[in-house]
Image (cartoon, rainbow, N blue to C red; front, side):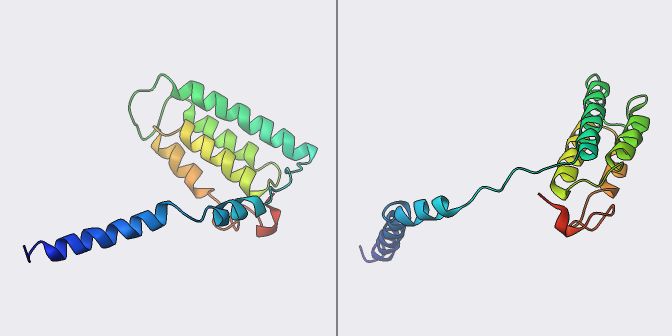
Length: 141
């Protein structure tokens, strides 16, 4: 009986901690979520909206090219590398906020996931703390 006593004690202590974590003070959780403010919508200029529209059209076309592809290849589907280059040129035609730039770049990476060279070229444009591609940290929405 004495060898089960430490195990029973450990189980009882764990049960007390588990009960303390799951129930009780919900006021702190609701107070924290209530104090979070939503950020204002990002205001893009006409040139930036045009850049987003053209880049989104390129992403849609990359998805159409990628759709019939079943396996990974370094060069990708025909014309996929050229369209990836066009996407990068279109994306760089105006200075976009970091979050918009990153979102479009991520969507392009997903659309070219089976093309090795395409993914490599998109990775080189990835903003690191908002310092690549002429972006500054103050340009986010």
